[in-house]
Amino acid sequence: MPPASTGASTIVVDASAPQSPVTTTAAPAAITHERLEPGRPGYRRMSLALFAAGVAAFALLYSTQALLPAVSASFDASAGQASWTVSAATGALALFVLPLSALSERFGRRQMMTASLAIAVLVGLLVPFAPSMGALIALRAVQGAALAGLPASAMAYLAEEVRPKALIAAIGLFVAGNSIGGMSGRILTGWVAQAWGWRAALAAVGLLALACAVAFHFLIPKARNFRPGSLNPKALARTVATHLADPLLVRLYAIGALFMTVFGAVYTVIGYRLVEEPFSLPQGVIGSIFLVYLVGTVSSAAAGRLVARLGRRGALYLAVSTTTAGLLLSLADQLAAVLLGLVLITAGFFAGHAVASSSVSRTATTGRAQASALYQSAYYLGSSAGGTLGAVAFHAGGWTATVALGLLAVLGVVSITLYGTRVARAERRALVPATR
Image (tube, rainbow, N blue to C red; front, side):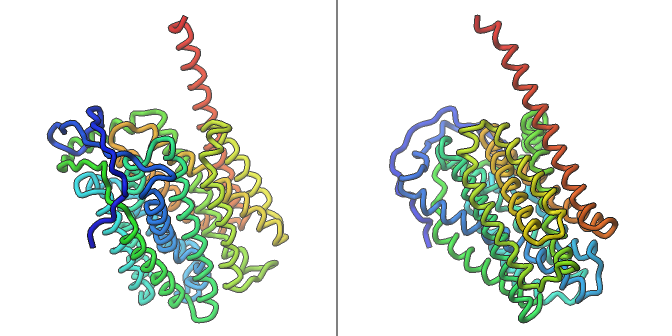
């Protein structure tokens, strides 16, 4: 089927469009089609397509997280061992996101996203048949590597196809799709596992992701402002080095990693806590706890308004405060307090992630795919570290130790944001004499 048209017809010549960081020859002046924005043809199709991709990606990536107690029991494994069914997927994604983003510079964002979803869904349909813990972890690693082609390509696609003033809102909607995928996948697996076991639950997630992948394929508009380049490892290395030498980008990468450390630790371990005394909840009810992801959908979609009102650092301070309050509330032994704590943790995390990831796309003027890929690498390394360390902490000191790990990561976000605030103030003061 031919690619869907965006419906936009206005064309302008942009001689200053940035050259691809992996191209080996100078690019001519770019013919740039009018970019998408709310109310224009193609924007809704693009939004729905990337929303569906976000649902599929998060449903697959974290498909075993709500099932960890059942997986542990099935293979007679500890919480730390079972947590690798999540950490292997997120860790592989972190390792492969940069090289696959480079391939997207050559073959196209749309093509890379389509291929990534297709392979990840195929592996997802094989995962339920894993005969051992080792095989399950290996398949999950392959699945994570396949999904690596989606997030950075999606961010670069949005940066190229959407007007800058609408970019934060568009990325927020993609992140909202992530939260819906994380929620629906966990709820689905919880109830299906309670009735038919964890293998049937993973099969159900695979079918959900298949439906989303099909929707994505038919809805995503053709990329109209993408300029392909030929692969050049040296140029790629220079681009990566340039991004890593940018203090603002490095701070944003660290913020994403630390936020995800909190989130990975909390949601990897929460099932183990709720299945034990004093809660003793069944698998289906534990899966339904992830309805709090709806709060993340709202907070990520509202990130643009938060930044407009409070500024980027103000929005991050609010996200940090909300996450901290949630962690402290979750220490209580009352289910209502734990649920409210999860609501606040989720709202704070998704708001902080949307602000940091959109800031990366706006900060990088060249090599946007690589800039986004580095953010995604840091983000998912944080998820792997959080999941594994959170499980180890829980085994050593219970939920209190897991919360302590989360608070330590939150303190890191606060420190980085405060430092960024001081740097910004110093830069403004330095500019004052030059303007007199």
